[in-house]
Image 1 (cartoon, rainbow, N blue to C red):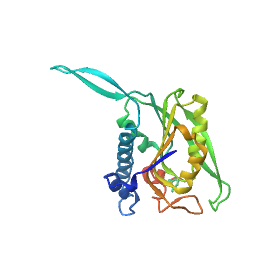
Image 2 (cartoon, helix red, strand yellow):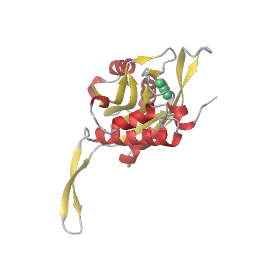
Image 3 (cartoon, helix red, strand yellow):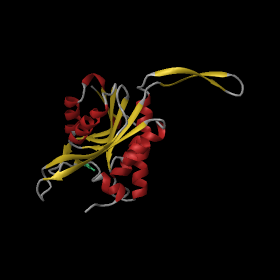
Length: 219
Ligand code: URA
């Protein structure tokens, strides 16, 4: 399985990742959401280099131009709520893509917030059979929400290709996805891969809680 870690390449993407990590910048919610969106836009552009293309003829005022355009039916899926700004960034570029939403949340087993199950409650998705599925989740902590989301979406068909697009992944989550997603048709795209999870399964150094930073703390 191909795993791409953009932090290994110098680009403007790293400047946006810096802003979502930095405690002196990340609490500006508008800027935080826009940075997730900007990273989604860059990620969409990078994924687009991996798609299949067809050549079409376009009539300009002066002549006809031959242009290569993507030739895949794309469905962008995300996990509510933290995934929304990132999803929108990807959708800004793949503007004719279809969209799927899944709600997954951690149900903690005790007040120490150390062990939890992931629950999926809601799924709104088009048919994904034979299509290219881009699974977007800004924080890939353990990989289990992504895996459950993928399995929930399989009730809507079998995708031809899967792109797991994340911003910060833990090394553990990457290993989990490599083991649990179909090897021959999955690519993982991460803006950065961090070494650790803490005892509450937050990514370290990570960014903190992406949903709270984007939309405010929940009770
Ligand atoms: N979700 C987050 O928002 N942050 C993490 O570090 C892990 C999961």
